[in-house]
Length: 502
Image (cartoon, rainbow, N blue to C red; front, side, top):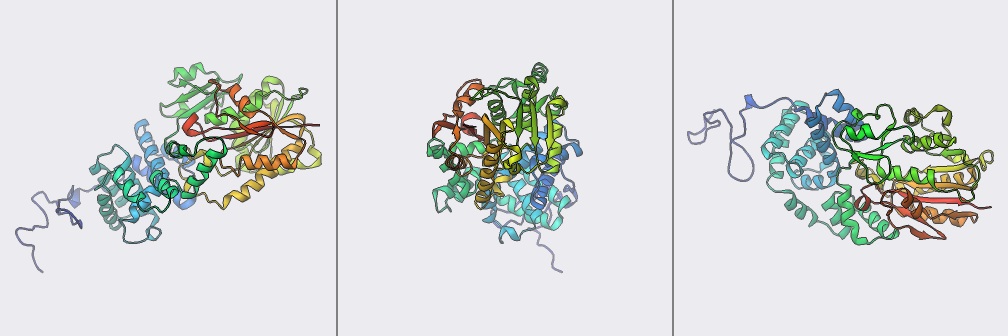
């Protein structure tokens, strides 16, 4: 067997091997084989497991991550690192995949999914986190060696070294240069599917804003959302929350924001009197509960038609308890119905009940005129909550929209049967898509001549501390209202308040 020449040793005096990269001067690897880590850093391991659950089981990161953090007993700093790493890698997946596609000698779907997830984690550390390149490389390769195997770790090492050769701005310019349309270019630059970019741009125009705001909106979608808290009216106390490090909320009375780590340690959260809820959802529940009934009269029977997982139901239930009203929280899916029960547990049980009907069944004659206030928080595409559900943008398809809009209109019509004359319906979506918002309301009004749209913009302004939500969008004789991440710092929640006339 041939021996290496004296001027090209396989190892140096420290036992380190030469780097066999394809380009650039040869360098020694950072450690000898015997010294290389074969264990995964706990925070990175948690992030890797989150990505594996999302990729292999269609799990939701916001549900998987907290359990993994507890199971691995991560302290505050490591938990924050795991959160940023997993959410960031998922959020920017499209951008990172576009980079990796130029560096891997096969189509990405042909890669072992675990290898691709490790590459995404490493790329995020290299391009978007304040992690030194050597640490990002060494730790990701160690993770791969421990979780996937020694062979794949070599591929991961080689690819990530090539990623590290350029900074994020350079990669963004190179990737976006491949685009064939402005929407595709924006999608590549800001990690959104092209069809979502087009839909959001149209939504801005539909709801009275400038299409040029699309860049700000996409950027806002990529920011980690702040944790919003709300004290249930009459039940939760805000003072202990603020004493625990939270800051007073600026959107709604009785709200706070928290950035100190594990929110379960905040007084009142485990008891359910303090709720974790996006400020946009808080505003919608407050607006429905407090808007004046156009014809006055009885105000005792309320319905949350699509109540799961229960955030808005808890607020409505607390208001109902204050007014001696009764809330029916309807949720047909059993596991979500249990979440609704948990959410309402802090509210005295005399004021609420959970039922499991198909929401469309409230269109039957037996429910006609039964309720004074109805919340229709309709199933939707969720395009307004992309900040909080980092993986969701890559799971959505334009093919989802027609089926959703048909269901949304059916639910709204059922609610119209179930509301009494002079009662109020709050139609809400966590999406600004024009087909799920304004067009559903227009179709509903055309089909129901005795329906009237209220001034929803004014109703939202009345419950917001600064009184300035997005301008109401005039429609018929009333208005709808749309919140935006880049304007209000909330999810992109839509609302239309409607009433039934005689």
